[in-house]
Image (cartoon, rainbow over all chains, first blue to last red; front, side, top):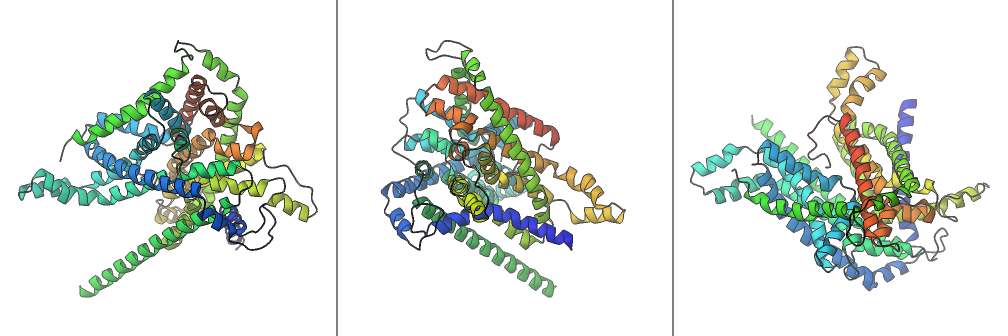
Length: 270
Length: 271
């Protein structure tokens, strides 16, 4: 009994720790006063200002463009890479994977400054191009790591059977291999997309002044000590994430329910 | 289907955007502004020894606290039924999907001189304490931001520890201490190793948390690097030398953790 109370208290403490700061941001986003700490009345003023703030809206659009373009390209290059890597011999494979892990293990700031040096040397103009190149670079490994296990699980006889039945290798590839590894491709794409949307450190070093992403704009807002629009933007982002997760979860639960129903039906018929 | 050709674009990409930039960092670290070979940059780095020491110390403590906080929680979650597990892990991940700058900003509100903690202290008749712009604030920011990176890998290995394994050991007369030391702990080591690596590397290289919560007196290695590349003291050669030191520190942590985790199948571990 005491053990149960103790563990419950502990769990509650951790979740309080995780959510209290967010709750505070949301609470103060409706606060009339500019300063933090004292609640002087309810207002939607900060939301109003947020949605009429051109800098925030532009950087939000930039974030979406960079994330979409870079994660699509990273998914294509990464999926192709995974397919190629799986046909290398063991030694070459582990060498390539070693390099792939470099960019995951490397501290973000090192990735950022090393790419910045490269772009300076290449005399590239800092902006969309450099941002997208940088994002593709840190996104590809996540695609590879999601697609490779799916390729390994794949039964090669299915592909060979398709060839025996008169498929061309290209057709067999599109009809057999791709559908089989598709869940991995989607997972890799989604991971790349989320990392890209959220990235600050690498973008900070590779973006230039004209093409700021939302995290960079948020950073410059937090540098000015008091700006309640941040509370509003936090609330908006939190709500979007929450709704997305709830929708995904409901879908999962529905799928599970459907599967159990199917199972029951199957058992009855037998 | 055996063809190596599709990997070519990736190999070229890695060469241009991962290997060449790293070589550039090394090149810049060993040259001066005129491009002549020098090791002066590293002599300059040594003047920042206190900052480097502080970064390593803070990252170490943050990692340790994260481990202590995350371990029982991960175990608790892994022993629930599937639906509860799913819900709790979602709750752990939810804050991670909010930008970490916003979460760190939230801590500014809490730790400020007239922030919520000090307001509460005054309310209870206690004297306020200085929290913002101290090492404590940086530490709290690190623990808060990186705790999920410890929980998730621990949870993912612990959920694979089968119930029957624990039941069997109970049948054979093991007490809860034995169950922990002989079963749960050894089997959780791979998750621990990857959690520790992720938290330590992220914490030791951060510059945002120290910038926002630590003030000017509590700068870390990350801040030093940022200042050399984008700050007032523009000096990419020195910046590269510091980056190289940071890479070595991270590599040491990773290799140390690999000693614990001899399992080399880490694919998909980040999921």
